[in-house]
Length: 389
Image (cartoon, rainbow, N blue to C red; front, side, top):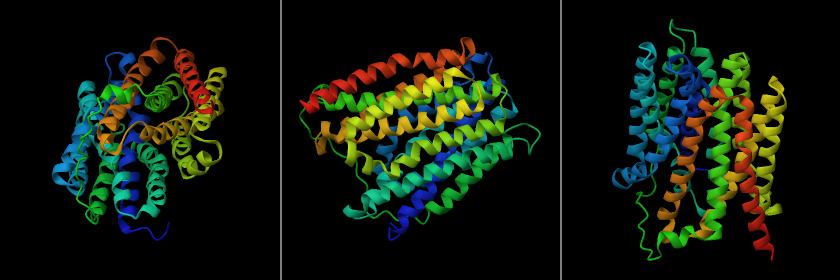
């Protein structure tokens, strides 16, 4: 792992900086939204819009890379993000909620760009080093768990208007990312996968492997996003837990999301993909139960940690199962519809989280995900019985 080329380490560092944006926005956007929104039920709109922006930007970002190459798009994304962070600052200073939500929506393209880092890392190494390169890049997610929340809390009160200092520090991260990315050296010319498959899309979608893969990844993201988006609002705004404790809960959640990725290959080898996804669903059931019985800090912490671990098992399991549903020359078509469904439904979850928690309660938020988890459990049990017969 230590002999990996410098590209991988550059991308790992940039992953931690780029992903700090996602952690930062989940942490503060709902809180800022609760202050600026015309109605409390719209407080999580900025969190939802960044997810919508991600879903809508995935294909255009890949297309731009096919024309201009990865490095130019990566560098442009840094400048683009700094400009939009400036727009966020203006919207907070002027107390314009929908401008803040629009800027958040546009930042979704930054997240979509970040999603290409792992593929750029794979292109930079030999076949034997691909697993190690992917694992190293994922370490950036662990760093972002601390970096995104720390700059939010540290910068909150350094200027007269709360959180403007936090956004200035966030912009600084992208300046550092730009400098680092100038040293990135693409080893291959990126070209968009050309789809020459004559098999219709419906034939791919109707396969059991595609259904299980997409439903697992979608369920993991929807349940995780729905509960995670509502957590800062429920903890800090409604229950009065300190911003520091809210930060610790979200940090632990993000660590639980990414740390298991370093061991996922071993888990799959011993128990298989389907069993791992089944455990992921059960972990999410436990997460809901623990959060439901009390609003105490410990309950929030354990619930969000188990939620992150459950997401990892479901999302990684679905991601690894998906290639079984398509041929090499069909991957762009299959992956595009997969990402659109996953992030599209995640956006709906993030958007509705604020409305649920303010108009009903934290308990209703938790109970609302149970039908989806039960349905996913049924799908996985059906798939498990089919594979073992």
